[in-house]
Image (cartoon, rainbow, N blue to C red; front, side, top):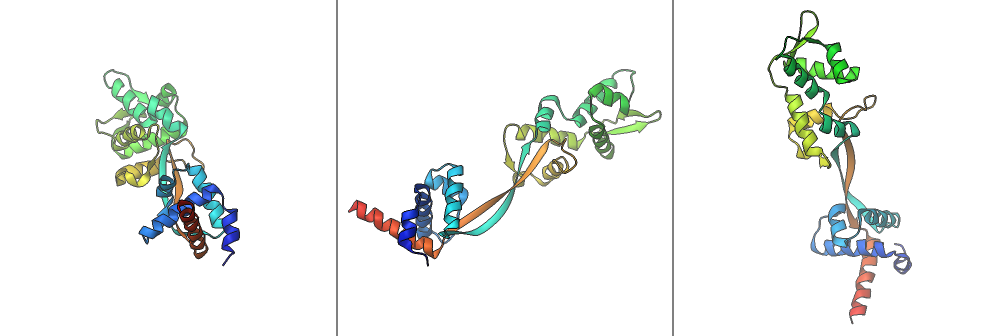
Length: 227
């Protein structure tokens, strides 16, 4: 065991707050304390909590008892643009429905040119719409809307609205929505997608024996001040 007195003297005020919060928690519960409730208990900023935890881990006064990974979802710059100007799949369906009211017929090239879409955006959207039966390619290479709804287009609009200006945990979405998010998330080699997935650790901490010894000294110090 390290010299408790020397460790005690080396403590930063941020470390003291974290140790005190962990000690109070462990006095009431056998479960480790996660970072989020630790942040609330200490009234510290997340950056301050991270610093204090790093120092305490280095001094072996606390240890990671549990570690889980959560995946968060947010909009990329492309997603923010799609929120304002609509996604390619929405724009393609819209223009095809408009031309149904006229005698005009459009090819894939016509749509790509008029909407200013990238070839990859065009091919991906048309492929999805064909698979869902929302469009068909007829003689002469013309594209027609079938009248069937596109679940992907509807899901994308819902997701763009729900994620605009915020970040959410992937697990909070129903499975069909999670599938759409993963299909349209940024991947290596394809950055023009509306969603970004970030894995973030969710750790829970406990005091080590050295940490418990320091916590006892802290309690003694508080008791002496009160007396």
